[in-house]
Image 1 (cartoon, rainbow, N blue to C red):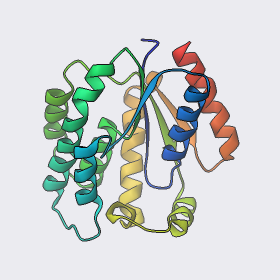
Image 2: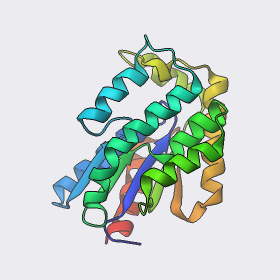
Image 3: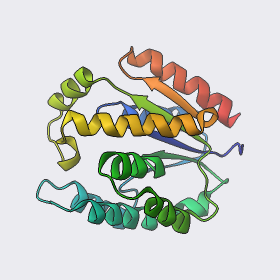
Length: 204
């Protein structure tokens, strides 16, 4: 594995992935370690425009349109990722596994279509390690309730989120050596330490 790996933080809404990627980015910054942080959808001006369309509560796209919008946002990020591939540590808040978990396992889009588009976009880009954050229904519900505003993807039912989370777990089982499951129902500070300890091993 490169000492400048691509590290992805995955998980459903309320699982703590965005919190943990923020903690890791602060840790790298404090230690003067060069890194790039991207979120999907989003990550650059064009992708952020697409993000607003996807997540808007006024949007009501069918499952295929959703897929193509997510892929369009990813396409805008690829040149930036390619530029720093193996040159900087790259942290990504959601990536290819999210597309499979949400669009295939959650919405039923053909997995081969998703894989074909990802293969076309990514070329030689490969994820080195993934932190998969898991959350139970009770904590998911409580955390969403505390959000000041909810986007379109924060308003699905529990059955949908359960299907997506099970999809993530299936993906982790396929390649478990490159995954670490984080039980976000546990103490958040404990999980921060677990993740930072793993980050040290990945980059040093």
